[in-house]
Length: 121
Image: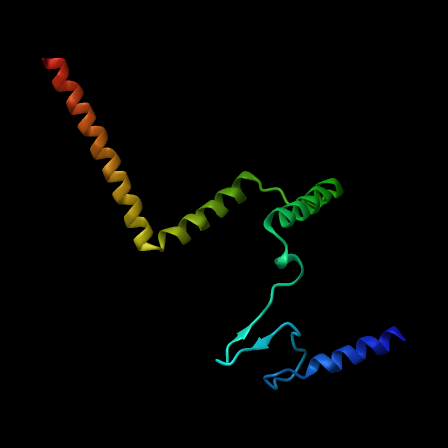
């Protein structure tokens, strides 16, 4: 009997507003502008604190079971290198970092020069 209910549910979901073939998402709605919007469901609909709590339990269970992934130093180095490469592709971001560094160095040099002038007096 449960199988019939599942099969019936599949055929009901198979037809959607756009007429596309295959299983549809019952949460999709077509607005008057022709854009589709999807409502968040399940884990995505939870607040961030609840998501963290659930994810933490999963991580703890994996460690207890012995199947959790732990980075070795070489793997961590490669992951950091990948992240650095991704960030450095954003030229605007890199320019901003460079400006901040230049401003910091300039103000540090100014402070050192003022200290030297005061010592000479």
